[in-house]
Image (cartoon, rainbow, N blue to C red; front, side):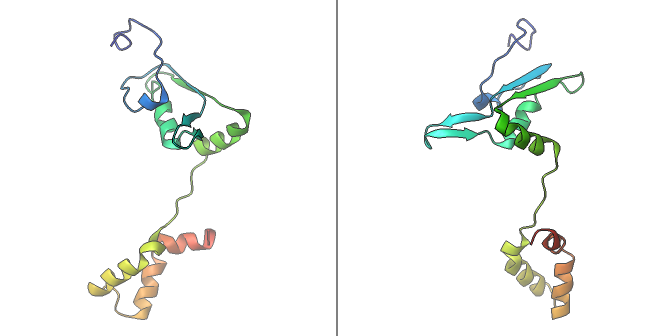
Length: 132
């Protein structure tokens, strides 16, 4: 289009189209972090994956920038989500019975000690101490 051909310098894109636009910009300006949801009849926050995708539209080869304009109460929350790593959690506990059955059938687990060893090798075991 005209933006890709550099005939126009500014491109305004609504949040709903952020996944369809395939161009990069020197400056990405995100004005607001919520949108009105007619089904819920209230304003809902953008999903963090949508914000990250919008932010990724700036030039990575050059010095591109992204500015997020939001309400002051949301500023610290967004900073935390964007700059601090999110903790990973194990969901093995939801499917533990399936894993135990399959490992028993394949004879990986034959004794009670094998089952205990299997659990101590898992990510679930590592996370239980930090987030019971």
